[in-house]
Length: 84
Image 1 (cartoon, rainbow, N blue to C red):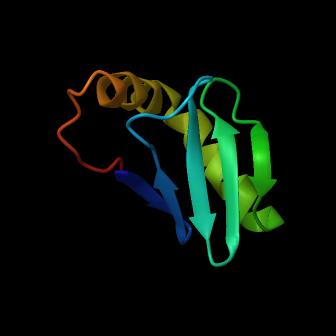
Image 2: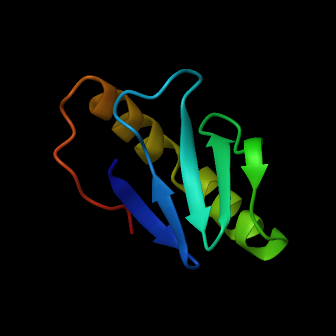
């Protein structure tokens, strides 16, 4: 489960064998949320409002990179690394 970014203290994770639709997991303290990579919408769970806003803004700014990592990870080609 590679951590691809840390946004305002929220750890952003993608799982190699995760189910569709393409999404990321965001972890902060006792909070967890799944966000759609395509829309930035929360699919499940939740984060504190300020953290959710920061993660969504980051995702929308890096949508292409995150979608690419999702595809590479599922195909077994992702070598790791984080998005700045």
